[in-house]
Amino acid sequence: MITRIVRLMLRRPRLRRFFWRRWYQFLARRQPQNDWVFMNYGYVILDGGQTPPRLDGEHEAQRNWIQLYHHVASGADLSGKRLLEVGSGRGGGAAYVHRYLGPAETVGIDLAPAAVAFSNRVHGGDGLSYRQGDAENLPLAEASFDVVLNVESSHCYGSMPRFLSEVRRVLRPGGYFCYADLRRKADLAGLRADLAGNGLTLVREENIAPNVLAALKQDNLLKREYIRAHAPRWLWDPLNTFAGVEGSAIWRGLDEGTTIYHCAVLQKPA
Ligand SMILES: C[S@@+](CC[C@H](N)C(=O)[O-])C[C@H]1O[C@@H](n2cnc3c(N)ncnc32)[C@H](O)[C@@H]1O
Image (cartoon, rainbow, N blue to C red):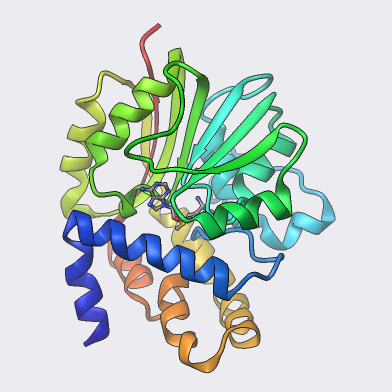
């Protein structure tokens, strides 16, 4: 019953925004443990031609979540650039990219103030900072970033076209938008139309659902155990669903092909 009510809410833009903001705010307050810094479904390299990123030992346990960031952010050269991540969550992705891929400055924006406070406390400093803000109304100057990164966040927004016009506004001419997120397969045509309708030029796109599903499979046990160890009993089911463990709607959708994981790079004309 609760799952059905949540699903109905998520179809309506204003309720969707309201729900996700509350949920991420709640999670950052309720589960403040420092070792939980990613909230995506991960990426396993399936193509022998791709080189796995080299990680320090402390980051090895987070490999699949990091690899999703690495794959998406590799769509643009970040070295010495000004990077914006929209939907930075608990900050681990922006921290990885800032530390390993060499931007001069990285700013993470997230709607949930508690997630922003958590991110600044755990990762902030040395050219990396996090600010509260809305993807659909970014509190940032025009043409102020070389690259905008967006990982598994846009499904929460009320309006994708509004977000994309904000991306276009804050990007410098010639700048890149590196993007990845889940969608129902039935909504892919609409997503493509939104991406194409914003004056950004498509550089590449792919469906990385097999890589993401492989990560869900690899991390299944780890996530279940982590949730049991750190969350109260009444939160286990919602967190397992959210984490995409075996049997969840996310897992089934990716497995059956009714859910895709779209990954794209777009460029603002110079
Ligand atoms: C699934 S989490 C992904 C977080 C992070 N990208 C990662 O991969 O770990 C989605 C994030 O998007 C943020 N978010 C949702 N709606 C937003 C909005 N309108 N503006 C900015 N951030 C938003 C949420 O607060 C949440 O932190």
